[in-house]
Length: 202
Ligand SMILES: NC(=O)c1ccc[n+]([C@@H]2O[C@H](COP(=O)([O-])OP(=O)(O)OC[C@H]3O[C@@H](n4cnc5c(N)ncnc54)[C@H](OP(=O)(O)O)[C@@H]3O)[C@@H](O)[C@H]2O)c1
Image (cartoon, rainbow, N blue to C red; front, side, top):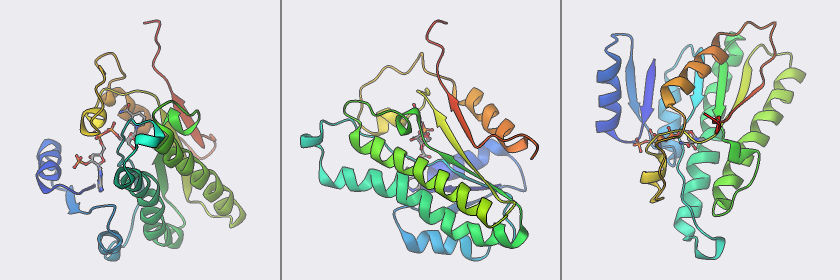
């Protein structure tokens, strides 16, 4: 397992939590293409790539600062595209591997104050679906799966300066179990996209 992150302290604490001698880490800011290149350079085999990094910000479009628009597109969309482009040749050489692109239910339906976030997550969806077709055409065994979760109880909103009570949102540990299931499903089952929503009746 290689944990990739931009913040050394956060990456180290994730590594400490894993307590696994096979786990390692790489400091990589997805907004920096050189970092992405360096990350993929020495990898000989890659079984799984999870494109999960993301940022959010809530703004009416006319109030949305340009630097935040750029940051959301760069991390959420370009980060996913460039990281996939960097890792795909290794998976193709092996003729195996699974890539999971974490979009959002906002990648399926637009929401107010989320026009740019939605643009980035719809972009991830289009990228994922087109790449699925491309790999099918090439008869490659590499799988690319799209994941579309609804609200989860993480620090995403606080970090993005969004004041939102997320205490009733889905538990990220439960969601992680679904991701593991997606990774373990046999090739005989087609699971190109998985949508997970909070059951508001519970
Ligand atoms: N939470 C939700 O309700 C929700 C719903 C649907 C989809 N999602 C998506 O789920 C994914 C995970 O989000 P989360 O909710 O778990 O939030 P999170 O805890 O903030 O995780 C996002 C991760 O992305 C990393 N990251 C941000 N900018 C980066 C950069 N430039 N380079 C490298 N890494 C960077 C963050 O690193 P730091 O720890 O250093 O900040 C953090 O580890 C995101 O793609 C998000 O859009 C979330």
